[in-house]
Length: 401
Image (cartoon, rainbow, N blue to C red; front, top):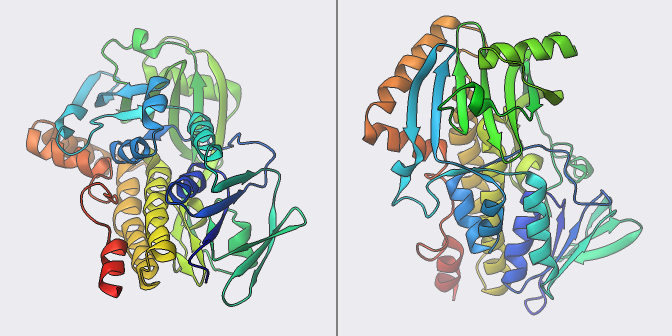
C-alpha cells in the first residue's frame, strides 16, 4: 500500500458518501466519488438532521448554511385530536451539543453543500453518471470500473444505498425483515400551524383513531402515516387521512407517496478493503431519520479512521474496531429506537399506544428524564466525537509507532 499517495474510491454521492469523501479529502487522502446518476438529485426525501449530525456538519463547514435554509425544531410535541398531550424543549440538550435542536431541511440542499466543499479540494474528484459494475481485488489494491473507466484504490467505501451494486458484486448477504405496514408520506403547503395553534415544528399525533408525524419545513408540511400494505391510497382517501390528522380544515395536498419499510444490517461493515456505510450497510423503519443520521455519523468516523490508517500508520485493526462499533450501534441503538417510535402505531395495538403515551407524559414532566430521552432520541450517546479527544485510530497509530 502506498503511504505517500493513499487513494480511496467512494461509491455513491448521497449524504453518507459525500460526508466520508469530504472528511478524507480534508485529511489529504486522494478520493474519487462515483455516482451512478447524472446529477446529485436524491430520490430520498429524508429531512431530519439531529444535533449530533449538525455538530459533525459544523466541523465540515456546512452546518451554518444548512441551518440558514431549514426549519429549526426547538421542541417536540405529542398531541391527540383533543389537544397537547406532552411537550419537550430541545433546549434541555444545552451542554451536550453545540446545536440543541433538530433541523428540518431538504436532503438535496445538504448534497449541494457537501459537493461544493468537495470540489474545492485538490485531493477530491466527483464523477457523475459513473455506475460501478466491477470491483477487482489485486491484493495490495482494488480496481473499480465505472462507465468503462478503471480506478485504482487502496480502499473502497460502499455508500450506494439499499440496492447497493457493490454489495451485489461482492455477494455480501443483506437479509432484512419487512414490516407489516408501509409509510404514507403526504406533502401539503397549507400552514398547519394556523389550523392547530401552538403546533410544534415536529409533532406526533397519537390518537386512538389516527396517528402520524407532522414535520414543518420552510415551505410545506409533511404528514407521515403507517398504513397497511393494501391500504386505499386514492386521492380521496389521502385527503380524508390528512383532514382527520389535523382535526378539521382542508389541507391542500401537493404530493403523496408510499414506500415499504424493513430493518436489517449486513453481517459485517468491513469486507476486506471494502467498507459499507449508510443504507448499503443497514436499513430501519426511517422513523425520526435515525438511519440517515447514523449513516452520516459513521461515515465521518470512518473518514477519520481510514485517514489514520492510510497516513498516520494506524493498524488496519482500527477499521475492524470501527466496523464492529458502528454495527453494534445500529443493532443495539438505532433499530430499537426507530421501532420504539411507532409503538402501538405500526401494529394498531391501542393498549400499547396508551401505555406509550402515558410513559411519554411522565418523561416530559421530569426535566432530567426528558433530557435523557432527547439525548437518546437525538443519537447524542452514539456519535464519534473527534473534537473531544484523540480518536481510537490516532491512539493506535501512536502505540504502533
